[in-house]
Image (cartoon, rainbow, N blue to C red):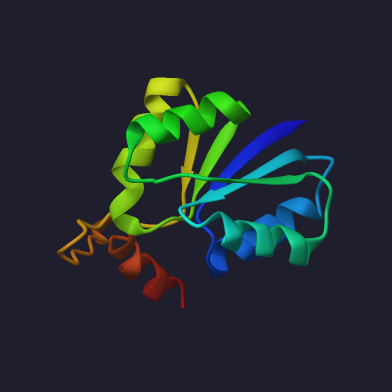
Length: 130
């Protein structure tokens, strides 16, 4: 049904790919890519499902990301890479017409800047709800 490309090979990626692999009727093809392919290979091996393939990519490079998208033809890209890589991955998704899902908030590489004003706007409502 869906071809999903996951970028990032850390703890969040491991859990996400494992859950997707458990739902092969929804996630028919899973591609996992990161700067270090061996990390992707280790995740795929630990999960042990046939519908996971791995690749490598520099998520700071829009051209490399587009080559990755063109090679694997995903329906959606799930970004679990580093927060400062969000914008290059988003740019590549836009250039290649790939749907995009992010799990984090953008931060510049050399400056931690958290902006959660949208979430904090719900604080009072949650307090009133108990």
